[in-house]
Length: 589
Picture 1 (tube, rainbow, N blue to C red):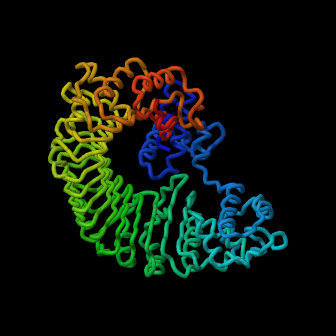
Picture 2 (cartoon, one colour):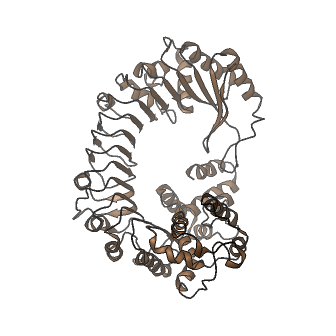
Picture 3 (cartoon, rainbow, N blue to C red):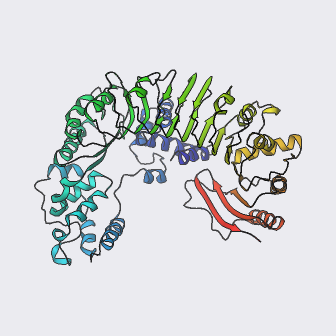
């Protein structure tokens, strides 16, 4: 979704209509994509520039508001169509050798569905003769004759408790087995304060009717802004005190996605008081206090996303969650000198979007780490077992201190605007076998010595056997070649596989650079080249047909395969808006 919105903005730079579409689309998406704080900031700026009336028109989808139809469809909360439902249920019936005729079900589903709130209000009065899989007279079996285990499995496959509620209304058999469900997954879009109480009622009704609750996932989203002091918060402590004690004895997994972080919440200490056996916890978009936080030794997975955390150094996190194995900190603010010191941690994602003077990780059993941050003054990572590392930095002064003790690092992804400067400060790392370099963009003001070069890459990582060079990094490498001539790479015999993301602005020049690399890396056996596809964007349904990629593409690929017939070739297309698209795999002459 981020890429699609960015494409709308980019596409709109030359035409007034496209600019209007891009701006209104960002405004429309902002309250519906609460996990992207940049959209909220953009909406505030657009409100200041264009006025509240313009913003309201986009949010409410008034006629001629300009919002992209594609974006409206992608953000729609419309339930799956009848064909999709029939396909899923048919697969379940086939798996259990049940002869099921979907005709009656399709007839029932073709009728307009009632609103979920009406289902809740009329829950005990609706006619139970409706059957999710058809009426008894028109099918070869009755829902009542299905095994309870199968009915429960069908309900368990539903991703939304709203669909579970519909099934309970539609079928007495489903209503009978419903208390055996062990999970609640409820997403709610608040468009006025009048819908808060029904949400609470629906959620508490679900909890009261389930025999055992092992998993709770609730989320809140606001299509329009609510600025009253009476706004409803899922992380509100008083609300949590109502339902947490009811599920505390069995709860293993808890996910709460709030809408904003304007009010401090004591939800985290409350969870630590009630949920002693909790294993997995996810909290999003909230302002969390850690006052009176109790230890939770059973918790092994924690995710905090876009959280304002009152734990500047992460001391309480380290003390109260000592057995974490998975930790995800994304956009957490309120930190000053954070230190992650967890002896059992194995996987960590830490994305810092604000400046912090220092970051510290002391994790002796960490295996996988993705670290994304701006330029800190100091960065310390003590992780001797680390084998997979994705590092995204804008720059660092003492990178050698960071990496010199990594003795098990096998896969390394280095991403930075200043990648050339960073590599200049790297020690030699002999353990890395799989390397990806991505400079994102050429750093402004780079001097000659800080340029990214192949010699620098192979000097720092002499034993790399698989190398992936992203488009921006390859562009920097080409620039360095232009400045100093083609490099002598000493015949990289250890390099077996290479993947390069190319843009064929000048096919002949690109071929010359590729030839320089392939001729000197005499140990190569597999080469993958992805070429930037033309006219690809979020409004395109797919890549262009495989039979017509253009003469420049075909000429380039043919020339490569003829010049290096011993290699196995893999060809594809790449785009900022789509996943890589492979055309040919394992071709050799």
